[in-house]
Structures are given as C-alpha cells and as structure tokens.
Image (cartoon, rainbow, N blue to C red; front, side, top):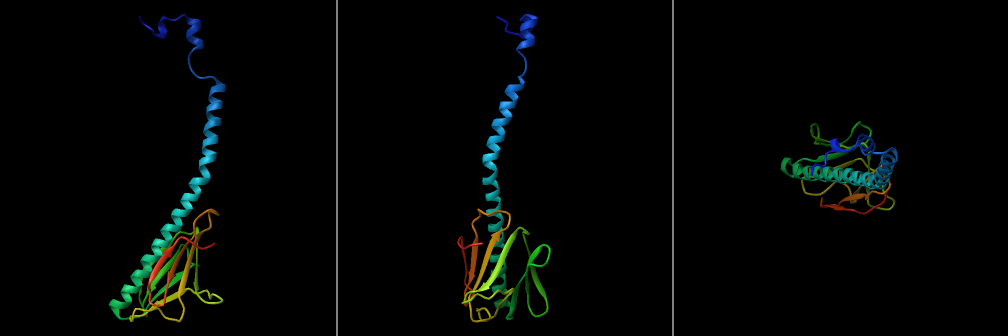
Amino acid sequence: MNASTNNLPRKLRATSSGFTLIELMVTIAVLAIIVGIAAPSISTQLANQRVKSTAATLESALREAKAESIIRRQNIAVIYNSASNPKTIILQNDSDTLSTYNINDQNTMTVNTINTPPIAITTVTFQPNKVIAGDDDILYSICDSGSTNETPREIRLNKVANITTTNTGSC
C-alpha cells in the first residue's frame, strides 16, 4: 500500500502539513524556560573557571620566581600590577624583567601580609636562601567580579616560600 501524500485528497493534504503557530509558540516558550534555568549555572561555572585559571597562573609565577632566585642566586621580585590593562604579574631581578603573566580583567586579586592588621602589598621578593623577604606570610585572595556565587581561591606563601592553594576565603 502506498502511503504517499500524493494519493490523499487535496483538502486533506493542505491541512496536514507543517506546524501551527500555537505549536511553535509552545516550543519556543519551553526552550526559553530551559535556557533561563541553565544560564545562572553556566555563568557561575565560567566565573569559577576564571578564578581557577588566575590561581594556576599565580602559582606558576610564584614557583618560577622561587626557582629562579635559587638558580640565579639573586633576589627575584613578584610584582602584581592591577593598574595595567590587562592586569599583570611581573617577575624581575634587580634590572631585568624575566617573565610577565596576564590576568583576566574580571578577576580581582588582593595581596596581604598575614598579621594583625593585614597590610596590603604589591611586591613579594624571593631570596636565594629559599625564603621570602619580610617577617610575615603572604596571602593572595582571588575572586571574580563577574559573579557573586563563585568559589574564591587563596594562595598562601609562608616564610620559607612554600605555596599552598585552597578553595576558601571571602570576596
């Protein structure tokens, strides 16, 4: 038996093809509801990924500075420049810039000493004797300004230049 639409009467062929306006509107409404539910979750994940990427970049820069200070037997400064566009982390010895790392502009990073009260700083210096300059540990807090639901990250640098990353803190 041939079930082709060519064998149907003309009136029945015209009424059974395509979608009605109501069907299309219901489909679009359901799609809009699904997108509305998923959008906040996606933006939170993107913010968390930006924070995670910045934390990995900072940790890499700190490890490189520590190694370079030992290898070169010189002080290596890690400078956080939030005024530049894009924000940067610069590694330099007395006169030369060794490396530059760019940070996402939507991330905010604060650098404080761990004492009472905390003192905001922008430069941490690694010494060749495997310690950092100064008497206090350093705490880097990384947040994302594009979202309020992200997980902040903290990178703690203690006096003997050990680097630890945690998913705690507040923005």
